[in-house]
Image (cartoon, rainbow, N blue to C red; front, top):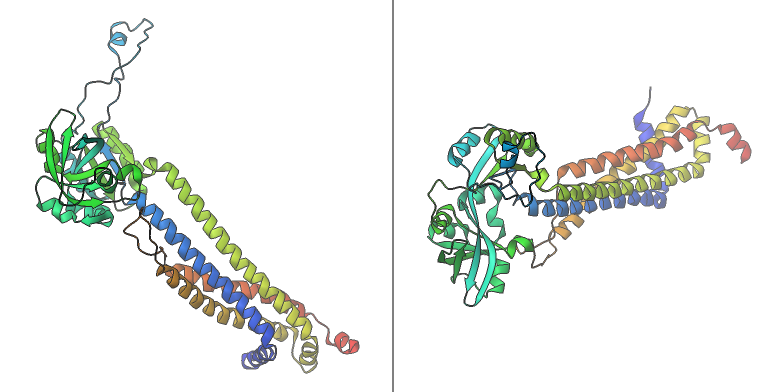
Length: 418
């Protein structure tokens, strides 16, 4: 029967008697785990911030009525057996709005996979301020719902979305447009539509998404305001943005909606395929570097314990000569490794947390992302669990190999060598 009290007492004595080696091994684990926690928290936080720039503004499924050429041309219908060649094919006459949009929205809302289905009215416009005239896009939306399901208020740097809801004939202007036209909250901007309608709208807020192509072109108003601007009825809806409980179901549901309603439905992964690839590569680099740090720390522990065994040859010989078995000796040195792993791992978690906290409170000032004031850090408890588990596993194997060697040492040969 193994006397763990004696084994742990001897292991403790060895660690205390060789403080320099013990501290060095412990610091190897501490800095390895600390660097892992700091890096993985910061990098995943940064990746999350970059993902949110796209995901917060992209619906899981975007439904719209796409203008496209007719599948069958008149000549092909008349001369079925003949070879026909048609140049400069014109798009077929088709309205931009979605037919029976509100029944479709209601049907989507009743779907158990759908969190929300929000209507929008999109139109091409011109921003007119004095002699300045810029082309752009005006989106009519439901402000309160957009804030709830798509975090729209996260990108409003001046004014509020509630003002857009409460004040009629109002607009949220992209910060790029406002700078070019020297406009600010409280001013009025003339909006000119493609059919020649001109209407002044009061600027109740400015938004900045961090994507120049959006900030320099897009502005937002309510669905009702845009419908009135276009002279269309309340049933006029050009787009439906769908948010699901599970984003992974977006592709299947989008294909189903296209077949059922003869509409274009683009899922979020198709719309952001290149960005998805970039995210995967960044995550791969992050975890590869993190795992490398942990492995390097494990090799450092192995080297120190291996040298410790060579320095403790006489102690091993004495232990075996006094009745300790090879298994007992092995447990003594493995206990030392586990103790170093526990102490070094816990200190590493504390060090990593403090460094992550320092980064999380470091000011991050950029005009592209005005709503983010500090560097993003992801304090996910899973990272800390992985860190301490890996510390224990690494120190176990780092101690097992030298301890196995100590188990096989012949005390007679050591004593003769002395």
